[in-house]
Length: 287
Length: 165
Image (tube, rainbow over all chains, first blue to last red; front, side, top):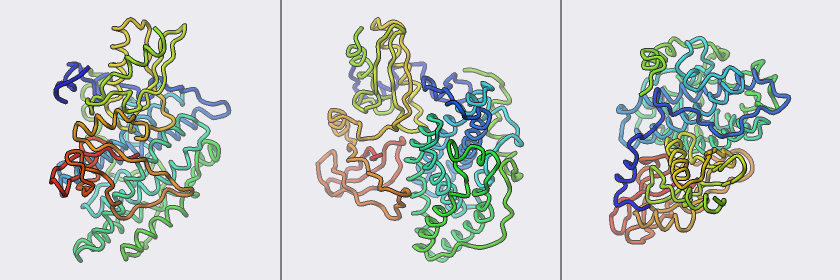
C-alpha cells in the first residue's frame, strides 16, 4: 500500500488509539509470556516491579512539567523524549507488578488508583526542580543510578523484568549522557550558570544516600531476581567522579538523612493530584 | 494460509510514525507461526515508550483477518531489544528516499559498565539530499524517539536521521 503523503498514511484509520487514560489502550505486555518462574515469590516480584515502575512514572511526570517551560525548544524535545521513555518503562513495570502479585491490577489501576502513601518511588524522583540546573543535577543522579541498577537486572531470573531492563538500559544510556553533557556546559559556562549548577547538585545530594539502602525486599530477592542497591554505589561514584572532574566541580558534601522507600516529601501529593485528576474525576471513563 | 503468506501480509503494514517504511522494513516483525490454534504474529517494540505498538498490532490483525487468516493473535517479543541493525537494506533505501538519513551500525558495547559519552560524537551521516558527508548534528532528540536532527553543511538542507541503537 502506498501513500502520497505521510499525513494520508497516519490518518488512514479514524479510530487512532494512543495510550491515555480512558482510550482502552491497555496492557503493554499483551502477548508476552508472563508466567512467573518457579521459586520466585510472586508478592515480592510484584512489589519490586512496582517500586521500579513508580520511580519511572513519577520521574517522567516531573520531566513532563518542563514542557513549555524549558529554555529552548530542543531541550523541551529532549525532555519530552526522556519522559516518554520513562513512561514506557513505567507502563511495562506496573503491568508486570499487577500480574506478578496476583492482584490483577492494571497499569491504570496502579498509576491512578493509589494514594500517596502507597507509592514506592524514591524521593529523588518526586521533588520539584528549582531551575534547569536543579533538573540536570537530579536527572544525572537518577539516570546514573537507574542505569547501573537496570544494567544488572538484564540478568534477572524473571525473564520479563530482564527483557524490560535490557530495553531500558539503551534508553538510560542517552538520558545519562544528556544530563552529563549539560552539567559540563553549565559548570564550564558563565559564573552564573556554574553557580546554578552547583546549587542544583547541592539540592540533589541529600536525596542520594537513600538510593543505595538495602531493603528487606531486595535482600530477599537478590541475587537471583533483584540487585542489592548497595552494590551500585561504586559504579555510581565512579561515573559522578568522572563528570565532576571534567566539570571542575566537587561533589558537595552535607548531611543526609536517608529515608526508606515509602517515605515521601510533601511534594508527591500535589504531583499525584495532577497526575490522577482526570482518572479520579471520571472513574472508569472511556472515550 | 502458510506462514510465508502471513509474513508477506504483516510485513507490508506501514509504520504509523514512519509510514514510508513497513514493519518488515524496520525489523519489527519477528516471527510468524501458523498452527491449530490459529495465526500468531510476533512484533518487537522499538522503544519502551513507543506509542505506536497498539496501532501496529491492530493494523496487522485487521489486515490478516481481512485476508482470511482466521484466528489471529499479535504477540509481543520483548527480548532481544529492537536494534536499528534490524532495518533491512530496502528499508534504508526508502528512508533515504524520503529525506531521512538511515542509521549506521549500532554501537557495540564494550565489557564492563556502560561507557559515558561526555562530548558529542562526530557525525558520520551523509546528507540524504545531496550525498555530502559534511553534516552536523543540530539536536540529539527529534519528533520521535528514534530520530535526531542534522544539517548539511554543503547544501544547507536540514534533515532527520534515524539514531543508531
